[in-house]
Length: 156
Image 1 (cartoon, rainbow, N blue to C red):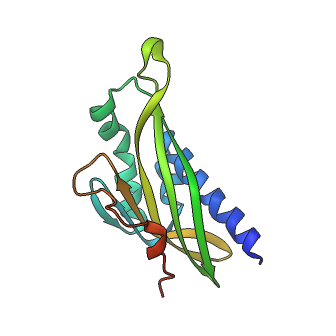
Image 2: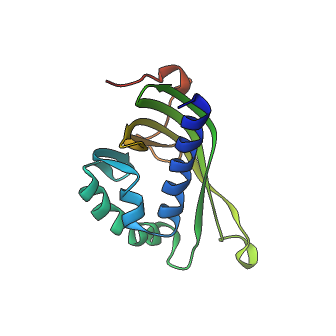
């Protein structure tokens, strides 16, 4: 596999994750993680694919409490930095969301942050071993002053 192939597959994983999130597909969301994967998000740390699936099942209700039940959210990822060593990878990527809360339901910019990921290639597919979601709008979840790309390391 070339770096270009790995990068394309990892970017595809990131897209599948966001589509699953935005369309509240808990099965597809959980399938982006390894069996022992870790999701570190605003509501805490969740360990294991089945626990992540259960957490994702409640995300629609959690988001409705924040944004309202009629609000459509769409997440986007950009500025993707990827480091690959064999069957392990590390990424940093910026994310932002838009939602239909503007005048006449028009979209407006929502919140933003970045992802800090550790990935593993399992049976030929890239999956998240650990996904940490940094939220610039939440106390205790902000990035801080340092460049997050400088902290990218491949985890054993």
